[in-house]
Image (cartoon, rainbow, N blue to C red; front, top):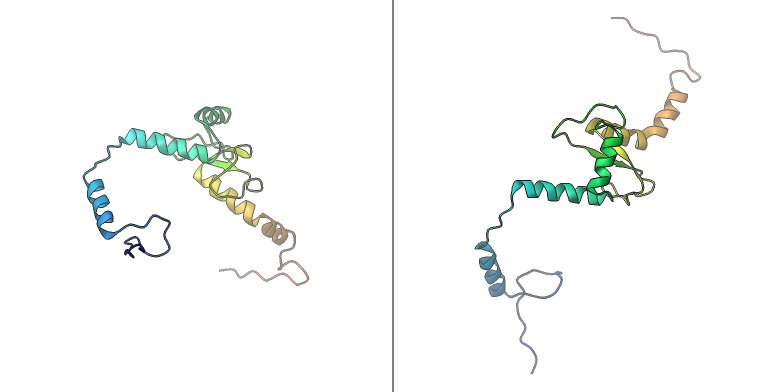
Length: 149
């Protein structure tokens, strides 16, 4: 005898197994009674550990990098303040993913300003160099007169 055709409450194109509306409601009720207790300190530690692991770093290697850089940005040498975000810079030629690295291509720790500036330099450096080498106002045309105010 063929199996009874059931309605799936999970919607089309989902991975198996299918679930009936009753089963989905039972699961929602079961989970609604639970309250997860997550201390803020633990959440902060978990997030930091996850962030470091994405770049192939451990707490020890991160601390060693901070010590080598004397707790300052590797580009502008401004000391990191308490609570200031520290960005891990890596070579995108080795690992093209924006927020992930193998760990071998980590170049240093940067402040927000230097991290953003370096991103622009890496993406637009050749365009800027070609413009500065041959600016259109100086190539084959008389200089544009300056208007005084």
